[in-house]
Length: 186
Length: 298
Image (cartoon, rainbow over all chains, first blue to last red; front, side, top):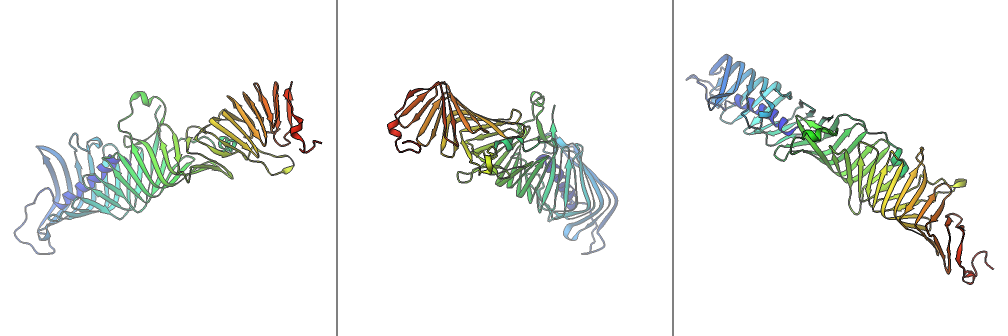
């Protein structure tokens, strides 16, 4: 239930989704497209890295990424990534943050996306968040399915999520239960 | 009542704190987590419910000096929860003891739970039919001790009347009450008032002592005692009430005032049921003419 812990974990979900949304840049696409299938661009065995001021701040992989120009839709399967929080950032205390999802779909222009199928976030410190589906709308992450978050000294289970992607506000809804370890420091 | 409070529940075991609520809102900037809707907190034998709760994090990590004290702390992801504030129809259960109020503050490092209410609805602690209320009730979670500001209680359990007669309740008011479980002692301070039937005793401080079964054995009033029963008044430096004999013994320049009579002696015994008075080495002034017409007086 540590606020920054949960912020970090859920924030990484946002990062994954935003990568799925293609927020970090426009890929090269073919000149021809149709509204539906097939994709305008299909990549197998994708690896990507995100740089900030010359440093890698995130990188990831996906078995396959399809891009459809109409609507700027991106679909990735078996995607995963790692985020390296900058020193001093809100995520820094958690170390490297890893995330995986079986499916990631997004609309780049609308900054909307959905990660589904075993969505899981891990941090170096030992925090783990698991859910089956998370939706991203702009800066808001939300779902209405079970969410389980565990970490050093705590665990929280909820049946819905509403969170800002920067971790400034996080709400678990529709019935929350959890446990805090009461450590006797001697 | 005090007896039950002292002996009812076992010591609170160490263990995790479980929580439930309808919603949980995390506010990182405010360093707190807010639980809303049918909040339940449970740790060992302690259960707290309410409508709303806030978990507040310590502003800084505890210093090594603090860590050495052996206090229990709630650690969450490397952070420390300093306290929970539960509001709205707060209900506390611990062993056979229950408590109710409008707000409860669970101080994690101090291992205390402070229960407060409103002027119309003060916090109460119950055990079966027994009840203790006051302006503020502090439950110590690392022991069975209870600290009460302006307690109001009835010592029902201490009264086993002979012949199965209905017990006469003893009501106690004071500014401050501390229940010390290990010493089987309840310590009242400041403006202590004890009422039993038509008898009222006042004293600056009083200690109630219990036996191993939790039965009241003695009330010890100290610092100047004033006892009134009907037209009779007795004073002394101190007084001991024997709960089994239901007698009050005044010593320390004791005086008995009964209408126009004034008696003093080494010791004055008052039997609260029969209203008999025994004065050791009595001396004083009697005015029989003022007692004409009384029962047994020609």
